[in-house]
Image 1 (cartoon, rainbow, N blue to C red):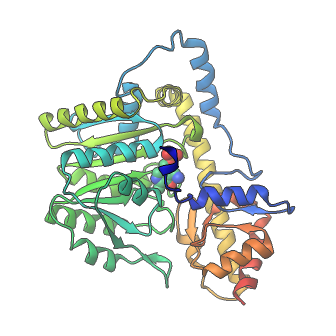
Image 2 (tube, rainbow, N blue to C red):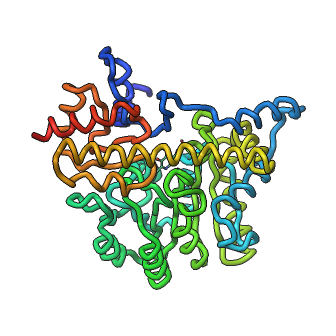
Image 3 (cartoon, rainbow, N blue to C red):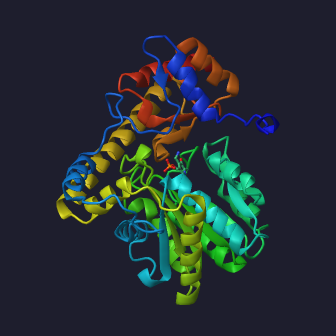
Length: 394
Ligand code: PMP
């Protein structure tokens, strides 16, 4: 049987991690994988998470199962963080999932259960795991143009033109903030226009929110998304706690479903519960329990927000610094967009040969499409990166 397996395509980003690890050169720079790093190149355990962990260690008296939908105090805390007051609480149901990826997978399966005919519309480009998961589930997809390669900003007219082709009942996958891989985001007016289009055409929004708090702040990052979700009868959100709580390996996420009425909400709740049962029964508890403790304690929550804010502003400083260095090194404004992008990523718009040269000749690793993880830059690496970019382009 096993010999019948076909080799699976390697995940490009995971493959890049391997190449970086095997590179013996001193001073190599990893701008590949999407993990936050501080100025010392470390991915810290956040202070409030550590404190919540100590409390959990003291207070926990059993490791027995919790429930198929996970820890409901966690789900509720996440509903509040993600949706605020944009949608009435009684229209929302949700399930704890292993990471944001788990939430995307469960919600994609829910789409398929509810409407096997629905096409899911994906931004071009998008996080490669979106099309991979949908293909694995045999869910039809289409892409809408999103990124203008010339300006490295959103090509909004093209996006709207493509979404005009979607049929009623189709699903539109949108990045809630901090678009991966481009770093280019919709502004509030554009979110409003997307809302009007979604309502007019009867589309179902499916928002992937993996970086809340990494762009303009916890509330500002979700303003546009909340406007959309507050206006539509039905929607889904897959939220990840990997980045903003730094809980990557503990696998913490939530799948939220917004329903028009109680009856539909309960149908969705039953589907989420059944999908958890079918795929892994109970979601992993530890990290979600930490989020629940932290979010329900005023001091821990304030400390978490303060540390998240330090991370966010640190990334913004790196952005302005890099844009300045690139201006100097290339003697042009070609890369000014780096300062306007938000989140952990920017797509630099370099040709594949330049990306390869950066790796081979300068030990600077970025994804093949020239996506860089801004948080991967050591402070003293700004000049080196800018000069290397200028060198490979000349
Ligand atoms: N969506 C996007 C756009 C992402 O970049 C990521 C993380 N790379 C995720 C979802 C899911 O992350 P995780 O499963 O680690 O929570």
